[in-house]
Length: 267
Image 1 (cartoon, rainbow, N blue to C red):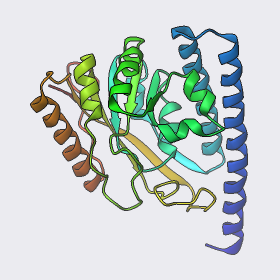
Image 2 (image 1 turned 120 degrees about the vertical axis):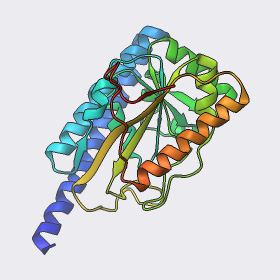
Image 3 (image 1 turned 180 degrees about the vertical axis):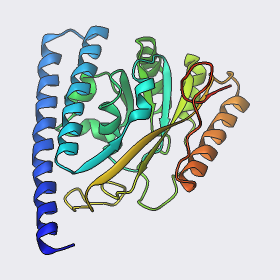
Image 4 (image 1 turned 90 degrees about the horizontal axis):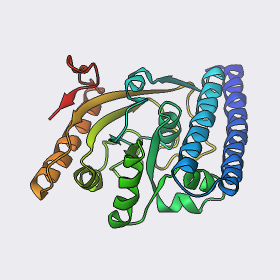
């Protein structure tokens, strides 16, 4: 890369950090004000999710227009209006939540407790009804509420981001317990990226090669597992095997079900 090309990429990248920072600041300020205006409840959480969806779309559109990212989110169009489904995805980057939120207006996410203590996004997480992950017992109640409200509940069952170039970490069983308790289907998502940016260990201010490419593909759909330990364990093992195999094979998704036209229904 020539000096001028490198300089151009650096200017665009660091300018994008400023612009997206301002978007997030507006997002959190709006959420803070809505929390003061609206009483706690379902209506406020729905308003928070709509606000988060709108601002996430704005951020992703800007990043695309600036040549910072390229996103293939076409596979998510079939999921946008679905309700009462648990989404399970690998977690290669901190960009994952933003990208998924920009495509799924009903999204609610189980997030690490440490994120709630940050000065920016705290109001947004509370306003949108995101769920703080302290312990599984504290997650199941709010998760049941969000699914009953018509949300799609997103979990990253690795529990943390992957390190660039590494296979995903071990899958934690919390998503299977939630699906068992709420009688919800489980939809697997595969997030593919060629960028190491904001993977585990990548500094926020370090510029990656541009553009950063992301694609989200739909994997198999599993019916709600039976409420016994063996069924939950089998679901966890199947999801872990599928994600590892899909990433190793560059993520070939299952075809759509001929009966529903939706991603790979499986029982």
